[in-house]
Length: 222
Image (cartoon, rainbow, N blue to C red; front, side, top):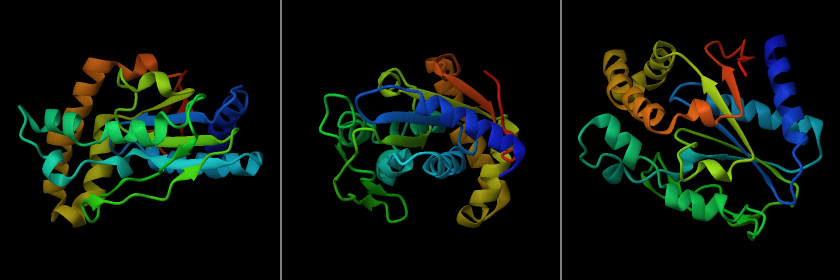
């Protein structure tokens, strides 16, 4: 871990551990596709586990997708289709967010869909500890119907060109060429994020905004 990462993860961990709540704490790490959400969530979970004996739970919204047939439902644009149809947020709320509220059962599932096989895949039902810390990463997490569930909202601020390059390199093998992967990121993922930012203003709802253009040198903007 670099010195700058150490500074950021220490500050976030101190903030999380200072939250007083008689139920599991829900931390959301939001950002554009390719902004480094999963990496930051994984590192944060490990970092927290080294600082506390409390249960730390990792969940990704990528395990709550809709089937490919639904994800690619015809829409006015690829971006709108991605924004509206990629995720099963109803299933995410009913399996994760609602059960982990103060008046919930604290019994949750960390996964209901497998992207690789494009099929339902329900993880075993587990019960979170009363003082558990739940780190969840994903896109579109600060939509109006989700934003009030979170105890701490972290937004990764990353330039479009940076995430396009990361995404294109990551998906080149899967999509057959760098050029195809890059264009898909522009037409589908960046376009969907433009809709999200225009309609929901996640930067105004976040508690912490982190510049993550260089994943080894993040810094807190506010």
